Amino acid sequence: MGPKPSPNPGKTARYYRSNPKARAKHVRDNIKINNTPAKRKYRRDLMKIRRKVKPGAQQDVSHRGGKMTIESRKTNRARGGAQRK
Image (cartoon, rainbow, N blue to C red; front, side, top):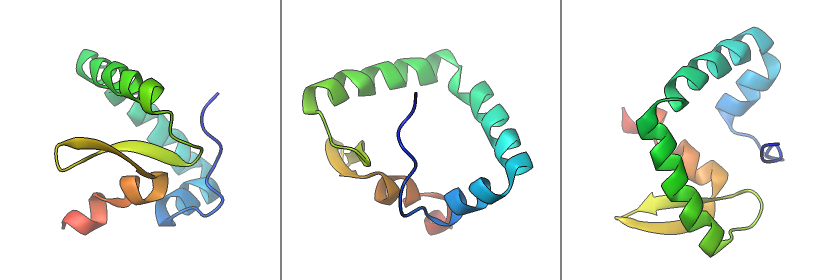
């Protein structure tokens, strides 16, 4: 069971919630990417840190300036894609 859906979703989350075919393709693609040995090791290491820090609901442990910090899930995951153009 994954985390609860955000009560205030961003643009991408709203898109996938309203387009089931696109969401299914997105999930299918992510399964291939996230099943690689490197990604699995990365997640294992993050979970060790997460268990120590114990962030609240709707929060991520993210990489900021070479350190791990707790911040909003939406803020952390929005930092990328469109902002890096």
